[in-house]
Length: 303
Image (tube, rainbow, N blue to C red; front, side):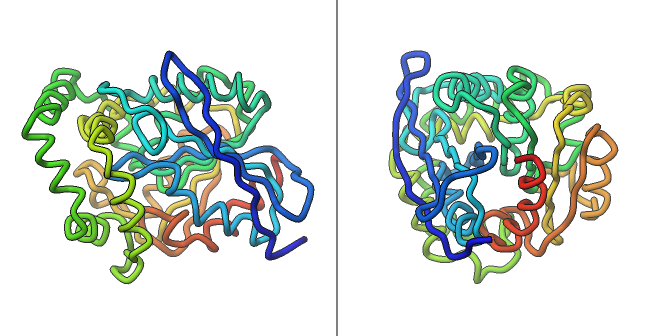
């Protein structure tokens, strides 16, 4: 296997529902691309975008893998348009379905971070023939995905945030001190891992105040629905990778051990498998080499 390869990158745009959406394509620099392409789905949060996957992309080719990578900015994030909208997982899945049909035009392996798993669930239902397999990095605790959150509650939170009060909160949340504190408390295993690269990327991504709408939609909990039957109907092979110190921001997942967390997924996924690696909640960024090593055999098997 080749090692120390690098990537060639291309930033492009496409149109969806009168919006302009951005994506990045990557291929190995010094070898011919081979294997099933990867479709990366970034998390939603203050300043988050496709840049979340930068370390993963670099490490993927450094370890000698050759799969092409498609890394889109979801609407409301990064360099894609940022309309004022209460985005749902179905909206983003529609965007990615269009992306697969018109840009990629071939089956992919979906690699999705955290609580954007519902977007992958919706996408797998809409376009199963385009998805060869799924990799779930630190997905939410199963109790969050197996009961409905009342719509009135979601809309109340959205309306509260979509206001001058919410605007003030977003300006506060973009500050270095807040980003560093939140990342240390909720995302990373060690405070040393919350480095300048991470903070600078978030601050740059949150510079445009219109990026707040996607974050507010996520905080409103439009992704928190009962996906029990949908998860059980995923027929593609699915790999679940958890951090040994995984934790839940929501009360529903608190108290679960990593083994219990993983067992909940393997009990529901028809073709599920999984494991744990060092780290907490943002494994592709915090534990990049270990994450690549954990997912590569699965991806190679499906390629």
